[in-house]
Length: 231
Image 1 (cartoon, rainbow, N blue to C red):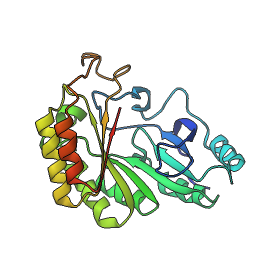
Image 2 (tube, rainbow, N blue to C red):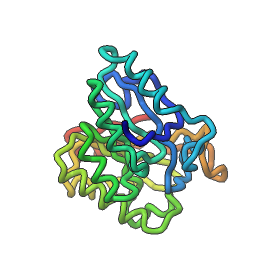
Image 3 (tube, one colour):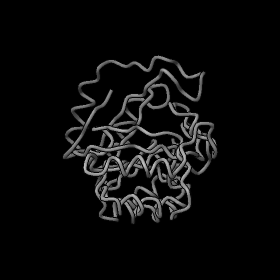
């Protein structure tokens, strides 16, 4: 039995969080960064008020065997929990493929979890030198990009994604970010326009609007074999 994972909630069925798979998403409690646009601020504290008992999670997954393809460990930042790798293995033994959503907050912990994943949705917060503006944590850029390198050298299937609030990044910086990812060998990149209905930083404008920027998205598509614009 793995050390009980602190799960702040779950989505029982999604087709969006693990490409090509019917999946359940487990939202792991706790995050060390304070991303200003975070739309799940309740998941930031290490303990949550609405945690789902790990035994209940396993019972739920037992009932979904042969109905779901995969389980995605999301957050928060799941790799901060020491029990994550064992929990991933426990779920794999039930017949599910394992997805991981992470920003690689602590590269050593990320590398440990990476060895237990089939697919990773990796959050590239910004250019390394710009990350602190978003995360409000010194050194977050170096950690984020170090973990990106670990992912790219692991051979694990992945998608890199960047959430965009235009108050925090402008189109030119976003294009430079994409170019640096392409230089590192990233093949699959998604830009996710922020959901502003609920954000950790209530001072951020609730409207993150730009022109449609068709030329920017065309330049992005030219950089990657697979590019997606969401939202």
